[in-house]
Length: 249
Length: 325
View 1 (cartoon, each protein chain N blue to C red):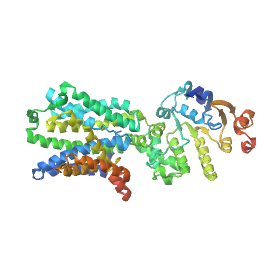
View 2 (view 1 turned 180 degrees about the vertical axis):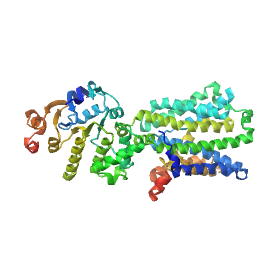
View 3 (view 1 turned 60 degrees about the vertical axis):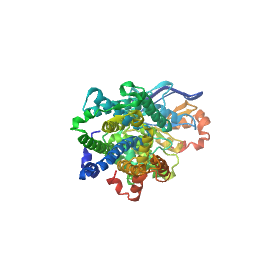
View 4 (view 1 turned 90 degrees about the horizontal axis):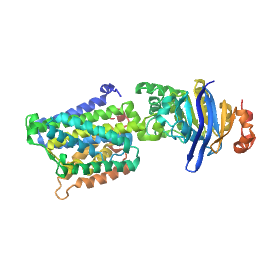
C-alpha cells in the first residue's frame, strides 16, 4: 500500500500554546484511519493543518506525493481532500441541494453547474437526504445537518475524506445509519481520516488508529493494539472496559 | 460562466419587456418631464442592482458604492473633453478603468469583514473625492463642464437628451440581465455561498479572495457607465455631486426596501424610492426631506421586514420564487 497522505513533522503554536508538535503519520489509499485523543489534544487542529485553514509552523503535508503544505482550503479541495466540520456549517438559507451543488461545483472535478446539480442529487440519494433536497439547510435537524456536512464533502469527489465527529450528538439509530454510510463510502475506495469520541465506532471502522495527546502522537497501530496500550489507557481511555475493544471485530 | 441558457427562461423576457416599456413610455406625447424622472429611476435601478451583487449575493455591505458612479462620470467627461471622444467609447473605456481599479482595491479591502469592510468602502469614496477635489486636470473642487458643442454627436442637445435616456435605460436593462445571469451561474452560486458562510465556502472549494474581488469589480462597471452618461447629460460634474455619500446610503435603502438578494427587489425598490423621493422633494418646507424618510424606512425594514418587499412576496406566495427571481 502506498501512502495517500503523508504528514511529516507537523508543528503549530498558538501564542505560547503548543497545539501540535512533531506529528507524523500516513494514511494509505482506501484506508480508514482513526484519530483519537482527549478533548483539546489537537485533533481538529490537525484537520485544519491538512486542509489549509491553518498554516503549520513546521513540517509538511504531502498528498499523492505533492506538497500541499499551507495551500488555501479552496486549493486543497481541488487536490482531492474534503472535510466535514465538528460544528456544522450549513449555508443556512440555501437549500440542501444547493449546499451540495456548491460542493460538487467547486470540488476536485470542478464541474459545471448542471452536472454538479446531477452529482449532488446522486450523493443526496446515497446519504439518504433526497427527500430534503428542497429544504433550507438551516431547517434540518442536527442529524440532518451532520449528514449534509458529509454529503457536501462527498460531492467534492474526494480521494481522502476528513470526518470530524460526524457521530457526535446523534442517537443510536442515527449513529448506526451514519456508520453504514461511512462503510459504503469506504467501499467506493475513498480513504477516510476520522476523528471520533465514540470508541465502539472508531474501533469497528478503523484499519489503524493514531492517538493524540497534548498535540503529540502517543501511539499508533491497529485498533486492538492501541486499545491495550498502557500509555493510551492512562492518558485517554481510562477504564479498559470503556474502550469497547472487546466488541471490535 | 458561459450561461446563455437564461434567454430561454420567462424571467429574462420579463426584464426585456419591462426595459422596453421603460424606454417607450415617455415617447408617448413627447413627455419630457416624465423622461427626466425616469432618467433618475434608471440610474437608481442600475446602482441598486449592481450593489445587490455585493450586498445581496456576496454579503459585503459596500457603503461607498457611489464612488464607481462618480469615477465613471469623471472619466467619461474627461475623455470627452480632453480627447474629443464620442460619449459611448468614453463611457466604456472609463468604466473599464474603474472596474480594473475596483479589482485591485477589492483584493485588498475585501480581506476585511463586516463593519470593517463597510468602513473601508466609505474610506475609498472619501479618499477618491479628496483626490479629485485637488486634481487640477479634473478641475479640482469646481469640476468640469461639457461644452454644448459636444452634444453635436447626437445631432443637437434635444436629440442628445433622448439618446442618453435610451442609453441609460439600456444600461439599466443590462444591469438586470447581468444580475440574473450571475445568479443563475456557477460564479453566482459561489458568491451566494460566500454570502452565507465565507469560511465554509472556502472549505468547499470557492476561491473566496478572487470571487469577492471579481464581484466588486463587476459591480463597478455598469454604475461607472451610468455615471458617464448621467454627468455628460448634465453637462457638468463636480466632486460633491459625483461622490455624494448620502446617495450611496439611499441606494442601500432602495435595495433593502425591494429585497436584497433578488433581481426584482433591487429594481422595484429603486423605482419605488425614486417615486417617493420625487414627491418628497417637491415639499417646500423641508429640503432633503427624503433623507429623513429614507433613514426611518431603513430602520423599519431592517427591524420588521429584513427580506424587503420581495422577501415578503416570496414568503406570502412561495410560487413567485421561481418566476420573479
